[in-house]
Image (cartoon, rainbow, N blue to C red):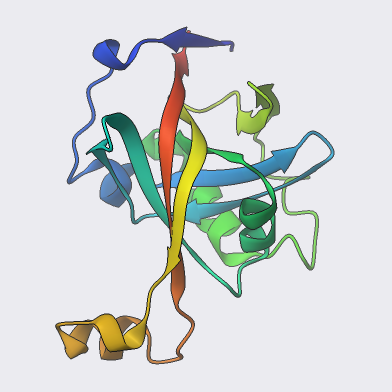
Length: 168
């Protein structure tokens, strides 16, 4: 099924449920050389007079290298029927295996970035800012203890949403 571009005014996102309930795939790279990972944290809104998305990637993730290298990435949201696939893609590393080969998802190129035809919504994003989560900056040390006991901190990427696509 094809993806169709829409405008920002045509999309409605629930800021508290989209990541938590639908999960998403963060994908960076180009055809033949990309990686994807499941994300269930993120935010979107207006920042610096632009529509933006913020995503978080641990340095230890294979997708981190792709996200660092590329200027753009996509965030693809799926319906509940893909939850099992997204769970699998979130636990396997593209460093070790070709996790896309039996995922059942169809990679596609959108505006020079990679996404998936089965997605219900795709955000094509251009990086604007990146910053590492720093343990000394927590004002609530319980978050650091609960989430980062292994000290594998995330890098936050703030990106402008350049294009939006929905399942046609």
